[in-house]
Length: 138
Image (cartoon, rainbow, N blue to C red; front, side):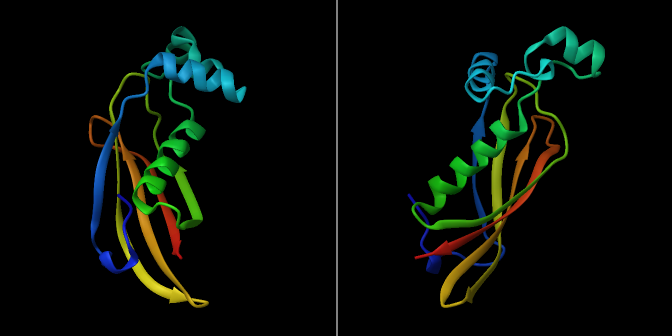
């Protein structure tokens, strides 16, 4: 169910959601987007050449998860800003926790607006993606 503007207060936490992108899902995403770098698909390359624990989830796939999260919670309202900072890689088959917080509610140019802090955390609780979004309510 989508939030209404009047339900939101500064400092309010948004519900968390969990995603576990499987290797099969990452392969499908990479094939669909043409983003087939070896760091995303090749376990040996990821470990030996990049020092990663395994192949990683593409940043644009994680951006898609955050976009879906915002659309699920804010419905047809317009996402006017989405800025992300990818801080750490996430590996396949590891649960990611997606969440956010309302940082500001205000009016601008006659529209009701909400600023959000959004994030993805890895299973160790480290923030792998930190971002900000603005929602314009109809």
